[in-house]
Length: 414
Image (spheres, rainbow, N blue to C red):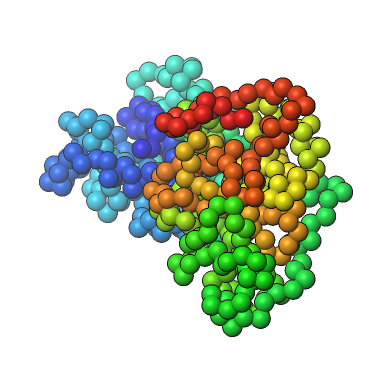
Protein backbone atom coordinates (compact mmCIF):
# COMPACT_ATOMS: atom_id res chain seq x y z
CA UNK A 1 0.00 0.00 0.00
CA UNK A 2 1.03 3.63 -0.15
CA UNK A 3 3.58 4.94 2.32
CA UNK A 4 3.06 8.16 4.27
CA UNK A 5 4.37 10.16 7.21
CA UNK A 6 2.21 12.03 9.71
CA UNK A 7 2.89 15.74 9.97
CA UNK A 8 0.84 16.78 12.96
CA UNK A 9 -2.94 16.51 12.42
CA UNK A 10 -2.53 15.88 8.69
CA UNK A 11 -0.13 13.78 6.66
CA UNK A 12 1.62 13.87 3.31
CA UNK A 13 1.61 10.79 1.10
CA UNK A 14 4.79 9.49 -0.44
CA UNK A 15 3.20 7.77 -3.47
CA UNK A 16 4.27 4.46 -4.90
CA UNK A 17 3.54 2.99 -8.32
CA UNK A 18 0.35 2.56 -10.27
CA UNK A 19 -1.47 -0.60 -9.31
CA UNK A 20 -1.02 -0.13 -5.55
CA UNK A 21 -4.49 1.37 -5.31
CA UNK A 22 -6.22 -1.68 -6.71
CA UNK A 23 -4.17 -3.99 -4.49
CA UNK A 24 -4.94 -1.85 -1.45
CA UNK A 25 -8.68 -1.92 -2.07
CA UNK A 26 -8.68 -5.68 -2.60
CA UNK A 27 -6.73 -6.36 0.59
CA UNK A 28 -8.96 -4.35 2.94
CA UNK A 29 -11.98 -6.58 3.41
CA UNK A 30 -12.47 -5.52 7.05
CA UNK A 31 -12.78 -1.81 6.40
CA UNK A 32 -15.65 0.16 7.96
CA UNK A 33 -19.04 -0.44 6.40
CA UNK A 34 -20.60 2.29 4.22
CA UNK A 35 -22.84 3.33 7.12
CA UNK A 36 -19.88 3.49 9.50
CA UNK A 37 -18.00 5.60 7.02
CA UNK A 38 -20.85 8.03 6.43
CA UNK A 39 -21.31 8.46 10.18
CA UNK A 40 -17.60 9.19 10.61
CA UNK A 41 -17.10 11.59 7.72
CA UNK A 42 -16.87 14.61 10.01
CA UNK A 43 -14.40 12.89 12.35
CA UNK A 44 -11.30 12.20 10.25
CA UNK A 45 -8.06 11.96 12.16
CA UNK A 46 -6.06 12.49 8.99
CA UNK A 47 -6.54 12.68 5.23
CA UNK A 48 -3.86 12.02 2.64
CA UNK A 49 -3.99 12.81 -1.05
CA UNK A 50 -2.40 10.45 -3.56
CA UNK A 51 -0.76 12.31 -6.43
CA UNK A 52 -0.20 10.64 -9.80
CA UNK A 53 -1.31 7.26 -8.50
CA UNK A 54 -2.23 6.30 -12.04
CA UNK A 55 -1.30 7.59 -15.44
CA UNK A 56 -4.09 8.74 -17.73
CA UNK A 57 -2.84 6.24 -20.23
CA UNK A 58 -3.30 3.36 -17.84
CA UNK A 59 -6.78 1.88 -17.93
CA UNK A 60 -7.29 0.88 -14.32
CA UNK A 61 -10.72 2.39 -13.84
CA UNK A 62 -9.47 5.18 -11.57
CA UNK A 63 -8.14 7.73 -14.06
CA UNK A 64 -9.29 11.34 -13.81
CA UNK A 65 -10.72 10.74 -10.31
CA UNK A 66 -9.09 12.26 -7.22
CA UNK A 67 -8.89 9.84 -4.29
CA UNK A 68 -8.03 10.46 -0.65
CA UNK A 69 -6.71 7.95 1.87
CA UNK A 70 -8.88 8.25 4.99
CA UNK A 71 -7.98 7.32 8.57
CA UNK A 72 -11.26 6.58 10.36
CA UNK A 73 -11.85 7.58 13.97
CA UNK A 74 -12.00 4.56 16.23
CA UNK A 75 -10.58 2.25 13.58
CA UNK A 76 -6.96 1.01 13.19
CA UNK A 77 -4.84 2.13 10.26
CA UNK A 78 -5.25 -1.29 8.69
CA UNK A 79 -8.81 -0.24 7.84
CA UNK A 80 -7.82 2.98 6.04
CA UNK A 81 -9.75 3.32 2.79
CA UNK A 82 -9.42 5.26 -0.44
CA UNK A 83 -12.41 7.55 -1.01
CA UNK A 84 -13.30 9.66 -4.06
CA UNK A 85 -13.71 13.37 -3.46
CA UNK A 86 -17.46 13.00 -4.05
CA UNK A 87 -17.73 10.90 -0.86
CA UNK A 88 -16.18 13.52 1.40
CA UNK A 89 -18.34 15.98 3.38
CA UNK A 90 -15.65 17.81 5.32
CA UNK A 91 -14.69 21.02 3.46
CA UNK A 92 -12.79 22.47 6.44
CA UNK A 93 -10.56 19.42 6.79
CA UNK A 94 -9.93 19.33 3.04
CA UNK A 95 -9.03 23.01 3.01
CA UNK A 96 -6.69 22.56 5.98
CA UNK A 97 -5.05 19.56 4.37
CA UNK A 98 -4.53 21.41 1.09
CA UNK A 99 -2.95 24.32 2.94
CA UNK A 100 -0.63 22.04 4.93
CA UNK A 101 0.36 20.10 1.81
CA UNK A 102 1.23 23.25 -0.16
CA UNK A 103 3.23 24.58 2.78
CA UNK A 104 5.07 21.27 3.03
CA UNK A 105 5.96 21.19 -0.67
CA UNK A 106 7.10 24.79 -0.59
CA UNK A 107 9.50 24.09 2.27
CA UNK A 108 10.78 20.91 0.61
CA UNK A 109 11.60 22.78 -2.60
CA UNK A 110 13.53 25.37 -0.58
CA UNK A 111 15.41 22.64 1.28
CA UNK A 112 14.06 23.71 4.65
CA UNK A 113 13.17 21.45 7.57
CA UNK A 114 9.59 20.27 7.50
CA UNK A 115 7.63 21.17 10.62
CA UNK A 116 3.90 21.99 10.40
CA UNK A 117 2.85 25.15 12.21
CA UNK A 118 0.08 23.40 14.10
CA UNK A 119 2.11 20.39 15.25
CA UNK A 120 2.56 20.10 19.01
CA UNK A 121 6.27 19.43 18.72
CA UNK A 122 8.90 19.44 16.04
CA UNK A 123 9.90 16.26 14.30
CA UNK A 124 13.26 14.76 15.28
CA UNK A 125 15.97 16.07 12.92
CA UNK A 126 16.63 12.59 11.53
CA UNK A 127 12.94 12.12 10.68
CA UNK A 128 12.67 15.55 9.08
CA UNK A 129 15.81 14.88 7.06
CA UNK A 130 14.43 11.53 5.90
CA UNK A 131 11.15 13.10 4.78
CA UNK A 132 12.99 15.75 2.76
CA UNK A 133 15.24 13.12 1.15
CA UNK A 134 12.24 10.95 0.36
CA UNK A 135 10.42 13.86 -1.26
CA UNK A 136 13.48 14.73 -3.34
CA UNK A 137 13.82 11.08 -4.31
CA UNK A 138 10.21 11.01 -5.46
CA UNK A 139 10.81 14.02 -7.71
CA UNK A 140 13.96 12.42 -9.16
CA UNK A 141 12.20 9.11 -9.82
CA UNK A 142 9.25 10.88 -11.43
CA UNK A 143 11.60 12.74 -13.77
CA UNK A 144 13.38 9.50 -14.60
CA UNK A 145 10.03 7.81 -15.29
CA UNK A 146 9.13 10.65 -17.65
CA UNK A 147 12.50 10.27 -19.39
CA UNK A 148 12.01 6.52 -19.87
CA UNK A 149 8.56 7.01 -21.38
CA UNK A 150 9.83 9.70 -23.74
CA UNK A 151 12.61 7.42 -24.94
CA UNK A 152 10.66 4.19 -25.39
CA UNK A 153 9.19 3.34 -28.79
CA UNK A 154 6.66 0.73 -27.72
CA UNK A 155 3.06 0.75 -26.53
CA UNK A 156 3.51 -0.34 -22.92
CA UNK A 157 4.06 2.35 -20.28
CA UNK A 158 7.00 2.33 -17.83
CA UNK A 159 6.51 3.16 -14.15
CA UNK A 160 9.10 3.51 -11.37
CA UNK A 161 8.62 2.64 -7.69
CA UNK A 162 10.84 2.64 -4.61
CA UNK A 163 9.21 1.98 -1.24
CA UNK A 164 12.30 0.26 0.18
CA UNK A 165 15.13 2.77 0.51
CA UNK A 166 16.40 6.16 -0.66
CA UNK A 167 18.06 4.90 -3.85
CA UNK A 168 17.41 7.18 -6.81
CA UNK A 169 17.73 6.68 -10.57
CA UNK A 170 20.95 5.07 -11.83
CA UNK A 171 23.40 7.81 -12.77
CA UNK A 172 25.18 6.08 -15.66
CA UNK A 173 22.38 4.37 -17.58
CA UNK A 174 21.07 5.41 -20.99
CA UNK A 175 17.80 4.07 -22.39
CA UNK A 176 17.94 2.65 -25.92
CA UNK A 177 15.42 0.71 -28.01
CA UNK A 178 17.76 -1.36 -30.17
CA UNK A 179 21.31 -2.64 -30.27
CA UNK A 180 24.06 -0.02 -30.04
CA UNK A 181 27.10 -1.34 -31.94
CA UNK A 182 30.50 -0.54 -30.46
CA UNK A 183 33.09 1.15 -32.70
CA UNK A 184 34.21 -1.21 -35.45
CA UNK A 185 31.00 -3.28 -35.41
CA UNK A 186 28.36 -2.85 -38.13
CA UNK A 187 24.77 -4.09 -37.88
CA UNK A 188 22.81 -4.16 -41.12
CA UNK A 189 19.22 -3.22 -40.29
CA UNK A 190 17.97 -3.21 -43.88
CA UNK A 191 16.59 -6.51 -45.16
CA UNK A 192 17.80 -7.76 -48.53
CA UNK A 193 14.67 -9.73 -49.42
CA UNK A 194 11.16 -10.45 -48.12
CA UNK A 195 8.12 -12.62 -48.69
CA UNK A 196 5.26 -11.97 -51.11
CA UNK A 197 2.63 -13.86 -49.11
CA UNK A 198 -1.02 -12.86 -49.12
CA UNK A 199 -1.52 -14.94 -45.96
CA UNK A 200 1.69 -15.36 -43.95
CA UNK A 201 -0.01 -17.73 -41.53
CA UNK A 202 -0.72 -20.24 -44.27
CA UNK A 203 1.76 -19.30 -46.99
CA UNK A 204 5.41 -20.07 -47.64
CA UNK A 205 6.60 -17.23 -45.48
CA UNK A 206 9.98 -16.04 -44.15
CA UNK A 207 10.39 -18.85 -41.59
CA UNK A 208 9.88 -21.54 -44.23
CA UNK A 209 12.44 -19.86 -46.49
CA UNK A 210 14.86 -19.97 -43.54
CA UNK A 211 14.22 -23.66 -42.97
CA UNK A 212 12.10 -23.36 -39.81
CA UNK A 213 8.39 -23.20 -38.98
CA UNK A 214 6.27 -20.15 -38.19
CA UNK A 215 6.91 -19.32 -34.53
CA UNK A 216 3.42 -18.12 -33.54
CA UNK A 217 -0.12 -19.45 -33.35
CA UNK A 218 -3.26 -17.46 -34.17
CA UNK A 219 -3.31 -16.03 -30.62
CA UNK A 220 0.15 -14.47 -31.13
CA UNK A 221 1.68 -16.97 -28.68
CA UNK A 222 4.95 -18.69 -29.41
CA UNK A 223 4.55 -22.36 -30.29
CA UNK A 224 8.11 -23.45 -31.06
CA UNK A 225 10.52 -25.07 -28.63
CA UNK A 226 13.39 -23.13 -27.05
CA UNK A 227 16.43 -23.36 -29.30
CA UNK A 228 14.44 -22.82 -32.49
CA UNK A 229 15.07 -19.40 -34.04
CA UNK A 230 12.28 -16.98 -34.88
CA UNK A 231 12.19 -15.44 -38.36
CA UNK A 232 9.69 -12.58 -38.61
CA UNK A 233 8.54 -10.69 -41.69
CA UNK A 234 10.54 -7.56 -42.46
CA UNK A 235 10.35 -4.22 -44.27
CA UNK A 236 10.68 -5.85 -47.69
CA UNK A 237 7.77 -8.23 -47.15
CA UNK A 238 4.52 -7.37 -48.91
CA UNK A 239 2.38 -8.15 -45.85
CA UNK A 240 1.03 -5.34 -43.69
CA UNK A 241 1.50 -4.42 -40.00
CA UNK A 242 -1.26 -6.83 -38.94
CA UNK A 243 0.66 -9.82 -40.26
CA UNK A 244 0.63 -12.66 -37.67
CA UNK A 245 4.39 -12.97 -38.15
CA UNK A 246 5.16 -9.49 -36.78
CA UNK A 247 5.28 -9.77 -32.98
CA UNK A 248 8.69 -8.91 -31.53
CA UNK A 249 9.10 -5.93 -33.86
CA UNK A 250 6.00 -4.29 -32.36
CA UNK A 251 7.74 -3.98 -29.00
CA UNK A 252 6.47 -4.40 -25.45
CA UNK A 253 2.68 -4.23 -25.23
CA UNK A 254 2.44 -4.37 -21.43
CA UNK A 255 2.78 -1.66 -18.78
CA UNK A 256 5.76 -2.55 -16.60
CA UNK A 257 7.16 -1.17 -13.35
CA UNK A 258 10.82 -0.84 -12.42
CA UNK A 259 10.76 -1.30 -8.65
CA UNK A 260 13.21 -1.51 -5.77
CA UNK A 261 13.32 -5.05 -4.38
CA UNK A 262 13.32 -5.78 -0.65
CA UNK A 263 15.54 -8.89 -0.85
CA UNK A 264 18.81 -7.16 -1.69
CA UNK A 265 18.56 -7.65 -5.45
CA UNK A 266 18.51 -3.94 -6.24
CA UNK A 267 16.04 -2.91 -8.93
CA UNK A 268 13.64 -5.39 -10.48
CA UNK A 269 10.79 -5.36 -13.00
CA UNK A 270 7.19 -6.38 -12.43
CA UNK A 271 4.20 -6.40 -14.72
CA UNK A 272 1.20 -4.22 -13.90
CA UNK A 273 -1.13 -6.35 -16.01
CA UNK A 274 -1.72 -10.05 -16.54
CA UNK A 275 0.48 -11.66 -19.19
CA UNK A 276 -0.71 -14.82 -20.90
CA UNK A 277 1.64 -17.78 -21.20
CA UNK A 278 3.96 -17.97 -24.22
CA UNK A 279 3.53 -14.25 -24.96
CA UNK A 280 6.26 -11.86 -26.06
CA UNK A 281 7.20 -9.55 -23.19
CA UNK A 282 10.34 -7.57 -24.10
CA UNK A 283 13.66 -7.54 -25.93
CA UNK A 284 17.07 -7.60 -24.29
CA UNK A 285 19.10 -4.79 -25.85
CA UNK A 286 22.41 -3.14 -25.10
CA UNK A 287 25.81 -2.34 -26.52
CA UNK A 288 27.12 -4.96 -28.97
CA UNK A 289 30.79 -5.66 -28.27
CA UNK A 290 33.32 -8.29 -29.28
CA UNK A 291 33.80 -11.39 -27.15
CA UNK A 292 37.33 -10.23 -26.36
CA UNK A 293 36.01 -6.96 -24.94
CA UNK A 294 33.34 -8.93 -23.06
CA UNK A 295 36.05 -10.95 -21.31
CA UNK A 296 37.66 -7.74 -20.04
CA UNK A 297 34.40 -6.20 -18.88
CA UNK A 298 33.26 -9.48 -17.37
CA UNK A 299 36.12 -9.47 -14.87
CA UNK A 300 35.21 -5.96 -13.77
CA UNK A 301 31.50 -6.80 -13.46
CA UNK A 302 32.29 -9.92 -11.44
CA UNK A 303 34.21 -7.86 -8.91
CA UNK A 304 31.23 -5.50 -8.68
CA UNK A 305 28.79 -8.40 -8.30
CA UNK A 306 26.73 -7.47 -11.37
CA UNK A 307 25.84 -9.38 -14.54
CA UNK A 308 24.82 -7.64 -17.76
CA UNK A 309 26.66 -9.63 -20.46
CA UNK A 310 24.67 -11.76 -22.90
CA UNK A 311 26.64 -13.81 -25.43
CA UNK A 312 25.25 -13.89 -28.97
CA UNK A 313 26.47 -17.41 -29.60
CA UNK A 314 23.58 -18.72 -31.69
CA UNK A 315 26.04 -20.08 -34.25
CA UNK A 316 29.35 -18.39 -33.49
CA UNK A 317 30.89 -16.73 -30.45
CA UNK A 318 32.00 -13.39 -31.87
CA UNK A 319 29.72 -10.88 -30.18
CA UNK A 320 28.19 -10.12 -26.78
CA UNK A 321 25.46 -7.73 -25.67
CA UNK A 322 26.44 -5.54 -22.71
CA UNK A 323 23.45 -3.82 -21.07
CA UNK A 324 25.38 -2.26 -18.19
CA UNK A 325 25.24 1.34 -19.47
CA UNK A 326 22.95 1.13 -22.49
CA UNK A 327 19.72 -0.84 -22.40
CA UNK A 328 15.96 -0.85 -21.92
CA UNK A 329 13.68 -2.19 -19.19
CA UNK A 330 15.32 -5.61 -19.50
CA UNK A 331 18.43 -4.09 -17.88
CA UNK A 332 16.56 -4.27 -14.57
CA UNK A 333 15.12 -7.80 -14.90
CA UNK A 334 16.55 -10.03 -12.19
CA UNK A 335 17.76 -13.61 -12.39
CA UNK A 336 15.82 -16.59 -11.10
CA UNK A 337 16.66 -20.27 -11.15
CA UNK A 338 12.92 -20.81 -11.69
CA UNK A 339 12.11 -17.98 -14.14
CA UNK A 340 8.88 -16.94 -15.81
CA UNK A 341 10.60 -15.70 -18.99
CA UNK A 342 12.36 -17.73 -21.71
CA UNK A 343 14.95 -16.49 -24.21
CA UNK A 344 14.59 -16.87 -28.00
CA UNK A 345 16.78 -15.75 -30.89
CA UNK A 346 14.98 -13.52 -33.41
CA UNK A 347 15.86 -12.43 -36.95
CA UNK A 348 13.92 -9.65 -38.68
CA UNK A 349 15.80 -7.05 -40.74
CA UNK A 350 19.28 -8.37 -40.01
CA UNK A 351 19.68 -12.03 -41.01
CA UNK A 352 23.29 -12.32 -39.85
CA UNK A 353 23.24 -15.39 -37.59
CA UNK A 354 26.09 -13.89 -35.56
CA UNK A 355 23.78 -11.07 -34.42
CA UNK A 356 20.36 -12.40 -33.41
CA UNK A 357 17.97 -10.20 -31.47
CA UNK A 358 17.14 -11.48 -27.98
CA UNK A 359 13.44 -11.81 -27.15
CA UNK A 360 11.94 -12.77 -23.79
CA UNK A 361 8.66 -14.72 -23.80
CA UNK A 362 6.54 -15.76 -20.82
CA UNK A 363 6.78 -19.44 -19.87
CA UNK A 364 3.48 -19.38 -17.99
CA UNK A 365 0.66 -17.01 -17.08
CA UNK A 366 2.12 -14.12 -15.08
CA UNK A 367 -0.16 -12.28 -12.66
CA UNK A 368 -0.38 -8.50 -12.39
CA UNK A 369 2.14 -7.33 -9.79
CA UNK A 370 4.42 -10.36 -10.25
CA UNK A 371 8.15 -9.84 -10.78
CA UNK A 372 9.57 -10.80 -14.18
CA UNK A 373 12.70 -12.96 -14.18
CA UNK A 374 14.83 -15.03 -16.52
CA UNK A 375 17.65 -17.50 -15.97
CA UNK A 376 20.99 -15.77 -16.59
CA UNK A 377 22.46 -19.19 -17.47
CA UNK A 378 19.51 -20.21 -19.63
CA UNK A 379 20.26 -22.38 -22.61
CA UNK A 380 18.06 -23.26 -25.53
CA UNK A 381 18.58 -20.44 -28.06
CA UNK A 382 21.29 -22.15 -30.01
CA UNK A 383 23.27 -22.03 -26.75
CA UNK A 384 22.45 -18.34 -26.33
CA UNK A 385 23.07 -17.45 -22.69
CA UNK A 386 23.51 -14.51 -20.36
CA UNK A 387 27.03 -13.92 -19.08
CA UNK A 388 28.15 -17.21 -20.58
CA UNK A 389 31.67 -15.79 -20.73
CA UNK A 390 31.82 -17.35 -17.25
CA UNK A 391 32.77 -20.63 -18.94
CA UNK A 392 36.19 -19.29 -19.93
CA UNK A 393 38.93 -21.56 -18.50
CA UNK A 394 41.55 -18.81 -18.79
CA UNK A 395 40.86 -17.34 -15.38
CA UNK A 396 39.19 -17.99 -12.07
CA UNK A 397 36.10 -15.79 -11.84
CA UNK A 398 34.44 -14.36 -8.76
CA UNK A 399 31.21 -16.21 -8.06
CA UNK A 400 28.09 -14.12 -7.42
CA UNK A 401 25.63 -15.42 -4.85
CA UNK A 402 22.08 -16.01 -6.12
CA UNK A 403 19.25 -14.50 -4.07
CA UNK A 404 16.29 -15.67 -6.17
CA UNK A 405 14.83 -17.79 -3.35
CA UNK A 406 13.55 -20.50 -5.70
CA UNK A 407 13.33 -24.08 -4.44
CA UNK A 408 15.58 -25.08 -7.32
CA UNK A 409 18.11 -22.29 -6.64
CA UNK A 410 21.63 -23.23 -7.76
CA UNK A 411 23.23 -20.90 -5.22
CA UNK A 412 25.22 -18.78 -7.67
CA UNK A 413 24.56 -16.67 -10.76
CA UNK A 414 27.70 -17.89 -12.52
